[in-house]
Length: 303
Length: 252
Ligand SMILES: Nc1ncnc2c1ncn2[C@@H]1O[C@H](COP(=O)(O)OP(=O)(O)OP(=O)(O)O)[C@@H](O)[C@H]1O
Ligand SMILES: [Mg+2]
Figure (tube, rainbow over the protein chains, first blue to last red):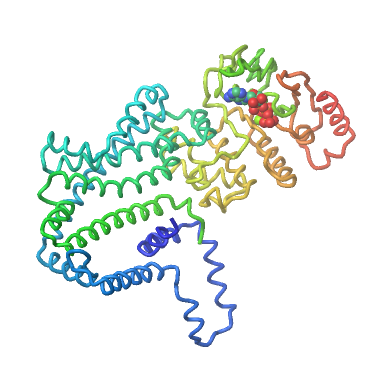
């Protein structure tokens, strides 16, 4: 978890700036401004420079570099052929080729659209249904056995059926994405809405808030932290869903590209597709956590 | 003399528990509160004080007896009754100002006016410099003051206070009591306040109602005839000490 937070910090310095502008932080900033004046001027020292380096932030690229070196080393020592395990340089070359030809971008765009479509569909159904289930025990009792039972069917087994029904186009992939992320997000929504503070609920009653007002002023903001948890799980699952859908039947997308490359024994291309998928999932995740930091600024302590 | 603003007539509260059957939280509460009166309710822990207050706030339906407010049967929460909970009960994502504004937002008061009134109210409770702070950055006493401001903002006739200072240290608690007394004198409101503290009850109220151990009954009534306005000196008068004894005895 810490790793992700550091990554988040690395990519989202803009959002931390937003947080610092929040008035409640203003008091703390005055103290910071006073402190340096009291320190005596210091002479340059290499040891201090090394200690001052933002190690926390450098750690992630350093680990990445280490991993690449290790990979290169394994390929070198094992002397593997490229169709079995290509080295990172080989993969990078392949990456540049497909990037220049525009093929990578067009496949990635297809996958991203499927992922986003699945997110919109899956999240909206999961949020609405989750809210209703959280509010009504009766509804929960009626529906939850079916929802839980439906989770016993592996999505990989369901995907071919969806392709048969809805064609090999985009829509069947969107459905697979939506179904993949639906359940965890649903559970998160239910937990989020149920965990709203009972005394605050009473406050809303005593202020004679309407159902809509109770939702808008209390339930939504109170459930947001948990909803964001569901959203983070949802974006990564949606990427998996898109690949599953494309594996089953598609003529476009990164999942299709992996399949194609496998058929051509073009393993470097497989790596390129896999890394692109990772990059998509990571970007979506970081976007969500950046949004979370911005929306839920009240939860983060002053730094 | 005018009509009582609040009439509590043999109110009883049973909670139904599937495992253990009915549970009597409140056996019998019968009393009246006059307009602009300050009444304290005191009793051992678990005797049903909060339950009674929540019934009066329209948050709970009593299983027996009736409550009359301004001559009409009380049904549900009332616009003219303000409620302050045992814990400050603020929304952690709202600033002090936004927390105080909440009741006005719900009533549909235009934003600019709501902000102005909330700001005024925060100044009144001495938090004029803290309007933009989040609850987590406020002390316990400040949070309770925000909660008080939130209850006062829509100018209810009756204030129901459930141990509003219960979670505070003794010194802050005393300061808050004085502030509440000043507010009450300035604004002329009917106050019904639950407290654990005998001195606090005597210092603030016109009348103290004592409750028995669970299941609770409103048993005794002690009229506090100390002259007003009350000051720190009121604490050292012989009458104050007499009243302390009387109240302590009736709580046995
Ligand atoms: N919703 C409920 N369901 C079941 N029992 C309840 C409920 N609310 C309160 N009780 C019970 O009723 C009794 C009285 O509770 P209440 O909160 O009114 O006491 P209190 O006098 O306010 O106590 P304290 O001084 O500790 O705040 C307690 O034994 C409590 O467990
Ligand atoms: Mg209580």
